[in-house]
Amino acid sequence: MITEKQTIGTIPALLFGAPSDRLFLYVHGKGSQKEEAEMLAREVVPRGYRVLAFDLPEHGDRTNDPRPCTVQNGVRDLQAVHEAVKGSCSSISLYACSLGAYFSLVAWRDVIFRKCLFLSPVLDMERLIRNMMRWTGVTEERLREEKEIPTPFGETLSWEYYEYVRAHPVDIWNSPTSILYGENDTLTERDVLDSFAKKFSCRVTVMKDGEHYFHTPDQLRFLENWLGEQDYQ
Image 1 (tube, one colour):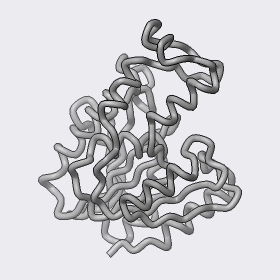
Image 2 (cartoon, rainbow, N blue to C red; image 1 turned 135 degrees about the vertical axis):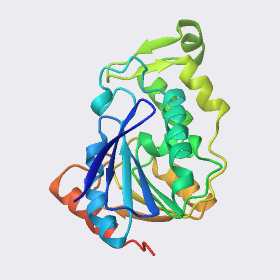
Image 3 (cartoon, rainbow, N blue to C red; image 1 turned 30 degrees about the horizontal axis):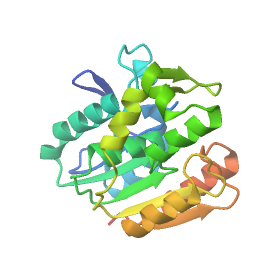
């Protein structure tokens, strides 16, 4: 498969496929990197698409990036990427996973994509942060006072992050969207998924016994089959 390394501003990117005016943007999740877009590329490149994947701050080729992978920095990067490609394509679609899906919902709320595919999307970050506060016994008042509080499970609660999330609710999303969700997802609760899907008319596929992180052979096979079942016309 044809691949080409690119840089969008200072953002390392990887472009899959032969020249085409139909493009999929690929936004990875936490702990991932742009190279994992290969699975999507294997599916859509033969159908006439290119796939552009890029590393979020602190990921992939940006492991030593001094800018942390916050929603503020992620949104800024996503907007820069879209600005760079929007004039060169007649059709732009989106694939986004987990945290990358949340960044996409905030950064591209006013963009209409031809098609969107979300894997294990984080759909309500405010609720997720509140859940993490509850799990660790951190009150809103304490977080406001201390600004940042490390947690036993490796995340750092941030008052600045929390304030930004509350000021930027996901209340607009007008792109046709299909979602793959694991039945045992502990980050996006089922009622959050159902509410989002109903509000924005999304198609939902649930993998029985699936998790938030699709990584086992069975989960990856399910994901690959799901990608193969989509309508890419």
